[in-house]
Length: 78
Image (cartoon, rainbow, N blue to C red; front, top):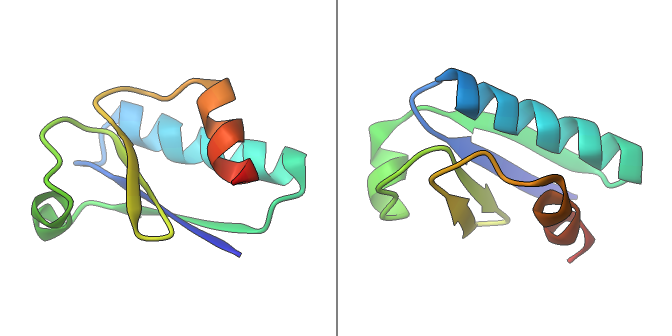
């Protein structure tokens, strides 16, 4: 099961990113837990300068924009 965190302030882009990842993982049949993380300490831990940021299984894979569908699909396949 993949552990996905969307880091950010809780803005619309962050919410949209979390929603997209949850929807796409369901469509692909990938077991994933998607959580929004608004803790500033998480941003510091992963050295995130721009949000939304996506962390999958403890690894920062994206930051600074809403990711594309193809990027999300690639992350979920790996």
